[in-house]
Image (tube, rainbow, N blue to C red; front, top):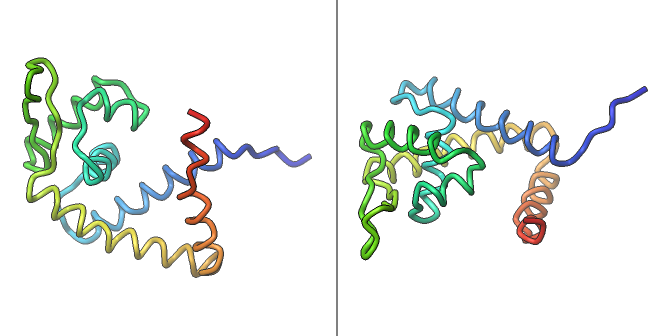
Length: 142
């Protein structure tokens, strides 16, 4: 009897696998080590600055985990935390020049991984899969 597959599990498994592959290729290039969580946070901040709480919601991890991750990235000079006007408690996380450079450079690695996938499943299927994942169906669920 074949095990039944569920979309959330399949997506989650592939997400982790892809992030690990990107990190492995990044490390092989001899650049400064960035953990999976740090890379995830950097890609999130590339879209827009976030508070710790906002990043925790989007990454689906605890605030404490995002705080530890942010602290490491601040020490490595990839991000900075800025005070939010009229709110002395929360800070917004923003990319530094080094963080922005990382995001630009990691695109090349992601493109390499995407090409490897296209060679296995076909370029048309990659285009189709990206189109499906870019659609707004996920936001309606949450």
